[in-house]
Image (cartoon, rainbow, N blue to C red; front, top):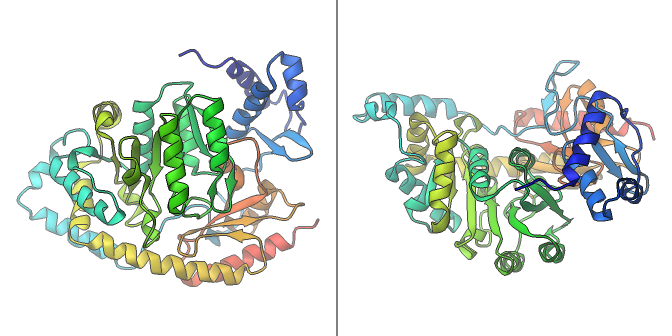
Length: 444
């Protein structure tokens, strides 16, 4: 498929910004001026700036215009992790681990070393895993409200690979992918890798604006919808049943694929049914064990409709075949014996305790969070730019994520995403107090 014509303008601007021909901080033409200068539609001009924004090259400021970003090194989708001072806390990335997990791993490796099927771990599994291991995942998913056959489950090296594999198989360059205006950064990377046209859907306090999604699907050929309905990253919402039914109805009406990300769904004890259960014929459900077991495990899975199994399996085979045998043996063993279920209970208690710490330490500030989650969305004052605040915090030894990492359109809120899982819990309160002091010391 031939790329949209606006891509050439995007490439021209991107090259000029990267080489310095358009300096950082420069104010770009208004959408109307760009449309007139380039003889393109106003909507096309808006798409140009939206794509430049998704690339982290420009930022839109309501009432002021669109500006070339001033890089600080500590903002964007891939910020620097090297601090100018000793590190106090990493609040930019969630790596939840619990005491004693290393011992569990040690015991599991010892058990595998004396198991009768040790030789099997040295052989190549079929793409997506063996049916026995897929069945273990299918059984585990029953507690998430997903009733699927093992043949509909593919095992992958983490959720990101599951997401990437599904998009590679089911989309083509130029396809329109609807996504929340604030969403998981990995979807931006995957969409860019496959040449997809991200179409941001405005967000509300309770979920995506479904009226806006319906209008988008009527006005543009939306091929797929990516969504995190249960414990959203970064906003923490859980869509209620009415919202889920409406989203499914829109997808069915416009024949859209639904890509449901369940990464943090385990944190909600009694959520409404997953979209996969409401629309199994069009929903690809992706998740893994990075947040509920261990981020270094790199074990994930995709649950697929019957019609997509063959194409997604081919896509997985073309990339990396799936999860390594040793990782699969560890992960499915812990799923089968209840270890992961126990870890999830522990994570929920830990996440709730960390949220309590954060809510107390940041009381009076503008934050949004699920009460049992590892993320908090922290709004900033009108005079505070997120990239500048991130640089100030880096000088204080604290790493954070800025809103532009999560923004899928040109508008970047003045906000930070705080990941609460990585610092030791007994150090979190002091780190958040230090963060608060540094932010409040920034002059107007």
